[in-house]
Amino acid sequence: MRQNNSLRSAARAAAVLGAVLVVTVPGTADAATVDVTVRTPGATVGPATAFTGVSSHAACDHGLITGGGVDQAIGTGPDSNGNHVMGIAPSPDGATEYTGAPGVVGTDVTHWLAFGGSGSHSSPSFSTTPYAMCFESNLIRHTQVVMNKIAGPSTGLSDRLVTATCPVDTVLLGGGARTTPASVGSLKPIASFPTFDDAAHDFGRKAAADGETNPDSWTAVGGIGGGRDDNNTTYAYAICGEGHGNNLGHAVTTVHFREVSGPDQAATGQTVTVGCVPEDGSLVSGGAAISGGNVTTTDFTKTTSGGPHLNGSFPSDSAGNPVSDGTARPAYWTAATHAGGSPSPNSYTDGWALCLNVHHKGED
Image (cartoon, rainbow, N blue to C red; front, side, top):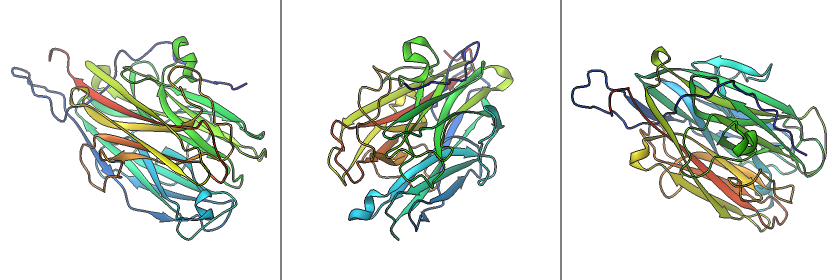
């Protein structure tokens, strides 16, 4: 039985974000502004050997991290089953990880880490590319990073779920997931998604659904194939925005979600792309999962196989292609999954886009 181990707040954020580029209302001297730019340094090659990991990072030259992504090159043939996402997480400097005591672990973070891991197969074609979502606003000027963690998973074909919740008077902008150590080749995050710390969502076990607004939490799920315990840990990260003068005004975050069937066959992959519509504002982050399906109507369940994993969760165009460095105001998010080396019947690929629309009070 999974534990939620959710970090809970006594109250909820009054409202949540969203962003049209610049909202200017006649007669309003202090219009709210929001801008988002993607930064990526390109691919980091590796891991080059089995049961190891590789780290890469993207940095914001302007603005603050609201979330970030990862995309992997896996090559072809049997080796392609071995490369998997090991984590996507905020960092204070591009090298340090938040892995200590749970709680608010950082403020005004500008770096994003992406981790790739290998199972029993490795290949020179493996690489990991990080993406930082860099956010600037005259209303939301500061961010907090909340981390939560849980031991495991450590027994065969199991998973562990953990949720990080934003403090009162902040709004969820994005989040991430991480599993350690890389030496356990079948250990990996299999889900990273927005949710709510409330009974209707089973306190983070059920994901935010399409059209829901103002999520306050981020859930990570770690999955494992063969059972092995090397102090395995699963981490969840929530990135929470603070309103200027603690005034978030009329801020709304809207979730968009899609789920598609597959991948079911060994050594095959699947993708799903979801985006923001203009009335919901701007894309600020996204999430991804490979699951047993129905993640927004029932508690999260993993696939019955141990091999399915993530190969990407990233800002994209409408066709699912990753955006380039310097792309302004991306509108879509893509999740990429893979079955691994064995069949994975009844698997589903899930993708989330978190869209922000924000303006000051009085701008109705």
